[in-house]
Image 1 (cartoon, rainbow, N blue to C red):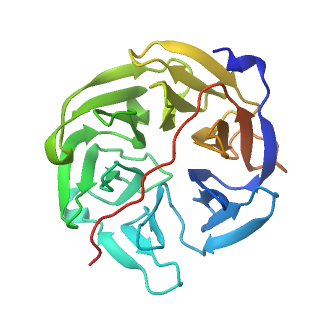
Image 2 (tube, rainbow, N blue to C red):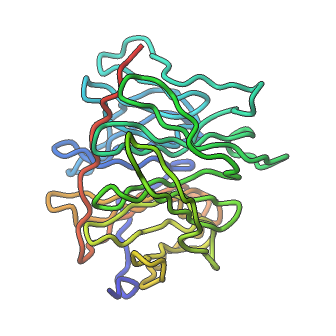
Length: 289
């Protein structure tokens, strides 16, 4: 698996800090701009359209089975497909050290897993550890793990038995065992990054874990034992997240931020053909308030 010999193709640029990439079959790549706000869709023909306007700080996106998008930020919320009022699923809770939420992922049943932040997004001043949460199918919210300093990428192994979780501040990717009713146990360090901090991640069909390396100008690829087996070099340092997509799920979409990029380039979206597919992310199926 020697992807580093291939140069990712830049599809579009000129954005702020891009996060939350999610490929939607038949439509294209959904992504957020945390600085400038909103969620957009990059269609296969290269056209762009707005999906969610204005909301800043979105780190994670999921589609809901009833329509609309689950988005993170100050809260975890549903933005209805018809443009109706936002529905809050998990509010912030400053009294208990929860000032916002970052990356999220869905399991095969449709539960939502999301990490919280104990400091304002885009600033690590006074950083304090926060938590990993799960929104269950009945809409109830459960705290699954604590002591997560800077929560980022989340992804499940192909059989759903393991959850991976980036803690950027500690240069660590955790692994949890997933048990009955979606609870997690036995957190341990799956891998440590030496060049760049682990940010968004995606898991391929063969169980390999693909990790965006913020400030590291690359993507690290790890086998199921946590050994780095490949690296994809990127032309800009701030690599924030990635996902699989395309008709055969072998298009790797990599998104970036403006830090260290040429001034007129900003955050961009890149695409690279890879030799292992990912898979479509499950729809969220949590009950709505």
